Amino acid sequence: MIINRFPVILAEKRLRVADVVRATGMSKTMLHKLYNDDSTRIDFETLDKLCRFLEVQVGDLFEYKPEDLSQAKQD
Image (cartoon, rainbow, N blue to C red; front, side):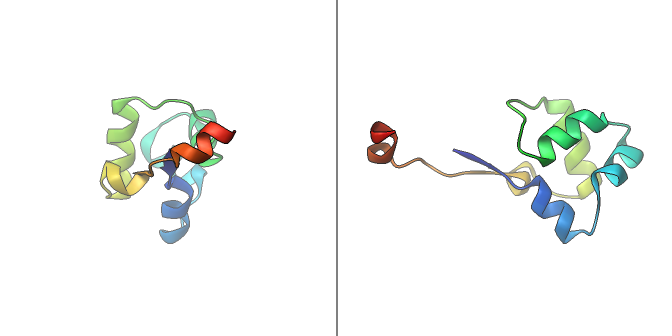
């Protein structure tokens, strides 16, 4: 499972999605989807812009957490 930490980072930096939109020129809709964890994919250009603006690494934005396979089989 991939854990999206974008909302956490924004909160830590006391930023809003609108601040990121203004500073980067990225799509408000796309950033809101990312913020609300409604995204299914993200491209390298977006990652690059986010990392530059937020001054973080990709691993700060997203965390990989292995799923419990026994739990996945029950679902």
